[in-house]
Image 1 (cartoon, one colour):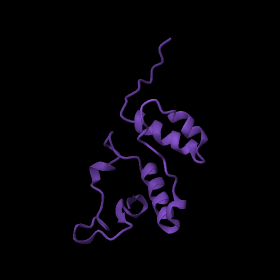
Image 2: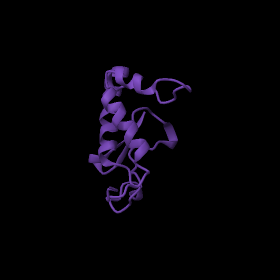
Image 3: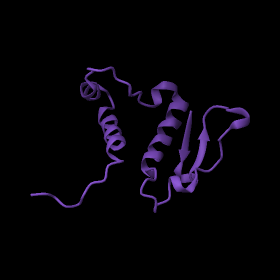
Image 4: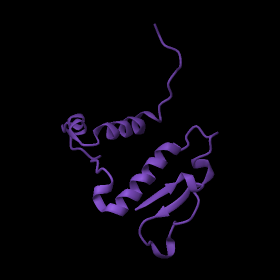
Length: 110
């Protein structure tokens, strides 16, 4: 229902009328995407999300993959991803989301 258009200056786009408290047309705060901020949001991830949001709102549910993210204990999350039509993309998003906060050393221990 809401996304950020990176190619329009990080402008927030709402795909449904939110009324008086609408964020539509506002600009995402600079610290969220500032290249100097190590915790910034990935421009490519925002761009991909915006594309999927546009498709979902043009074609309904057929436009964007629906990925379950709240699996019950003992559920085979990897098996679910493997069988999904967009499983590769789903896995990439999961890995990026879970690994992004971690800092990795460039040195390799031998």
